[in-house]
Image 1: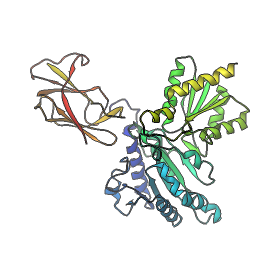
Image 2 (image 1 turned 90 degrees about the horizontal axis):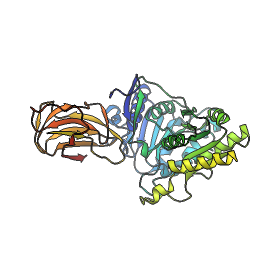
Image 3 (image 1 turned 45 degrees about the horizontal axis):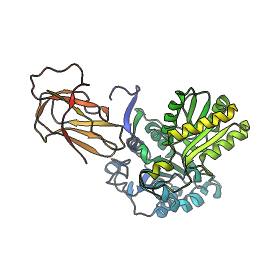
Image 4 (image 1 turned 30 degrees about the vertical axis):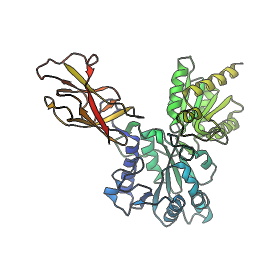
Length: 332
Length: 100
């Protein structure tokens, strides 16, 4: 609309991309409904469900009490009964309350019933730090990657959020859709045509020859910033946005690392048993001991203190230092 | 004298979308009048004239995007003043803005 977007796209806020995906999917499939805190007339905690209540009404856009275990439980049950619910958990930290129905029942239902039942539920939740302290800031998506039967997506752009949410709502098993508080103020170009984006495909956001950085969600922006800084030092960095964490698009990662010969992983969550560990292990299984390093949050709770919060989180300068050290060791 | 109406500073936001201009080019605003409404990811920002002036040029129409701090339009004290060539050297209009 301002004339700078690619042809055939519209520039919209991240939250509007989510609302658009929901609106199109709900028009197409009457089995889809939304439930969560403030999803109704309020339009969602981040206004990401704006307009849905007015169009689809209270039966399909259901406000719920602060009861995450019940919400996920009802979602999994309704999915087993033939609906396609999207359960909205405002803070990813509180998804922990819904792990029993999601992990013990939803993710295993198809296996347990020999394929007679499935649980096509999407649990949409918001991760990331934004001044809200120890229990409203965590990125625990790595915890979910080890659950057989669960798919986990974590987009970094409005277009990917739109396409992956549409795809998630068509899946036959549970999908956890992770967005990020610091992505909501950002706008991006989204295709005007109704589309979906297949789950399980990473994106190469920047091509390079010296180092591969894999990352996801908000940290993709940090990786891109670090890659620009490293370029000015003469280092060429390839940035891969994983987009889907389970299943991992290992082929895209391996093919990049084959070219660059070094791998740095970046995530906002903890590095211990994090996304990066899994990426590095799988690359090592395929290519042998390629030089690799991880960057993530420091091993401390995320404070709401405006000095301590950024001190704990990865930023471009930490990525640059880690990249320099990694490549220095390789040359030695 | 000419003045710029620029996108006011909003925490966390890099750019905003213009929602609605509350007057066409040539419209005279009094201090306190609503000039333009802007939309962030979660709020509407009402930009009000902090001094009287005539809207002379709209640089960013409704539906367009603009970066924080960059100009949306030009105002002048008098309608008869000739439009300047470049917007860069023009001072910012005194505005009040309210984030709803």
